[in-house]
Amino acid sequence: MPSLGPAEILVILVVALLVFGPDKMPDIARQVGRGMREFRKVQQHLRSELRDVVAEFDAPSSATTADVDPLPMLPPPDASGSLPGTTPEAPPTLPGNDPGPSEPA
Image (cartoon, rainbow, N blue to C red; front, side, top):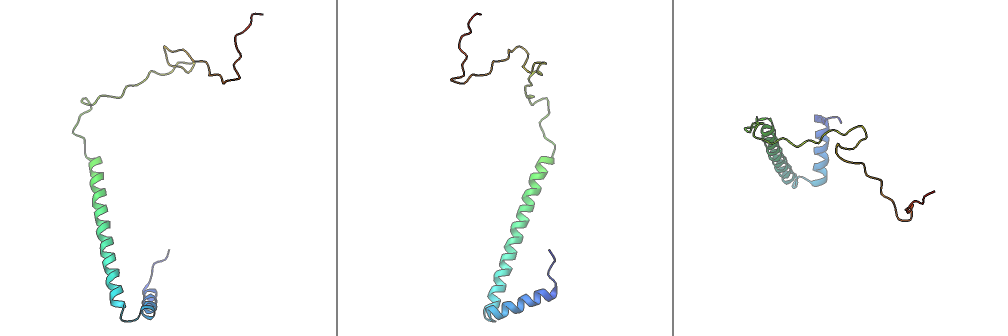
């Protein structure tokens, strides 16, 4: 998006003068100035807040790794895909698909 040059700003001001008239232009300019000032305050506040949060994460922690309990880890699965010491479960059957007791041949 191209930036506004002096000629474009002058055209905008002339159109605003024609639309709003000379009596309303100082009030409009004052409101625009207040809005820009408020926007800059909010922008500066957010910038400082983000800087503080980033500084918090970048600062070295006072707790040592010996003080913190490590997360428990599960043993790796064996070749069948189940965890050691467990038996694989049979897939659940749906109602109506139950084969029933098998009959001896």
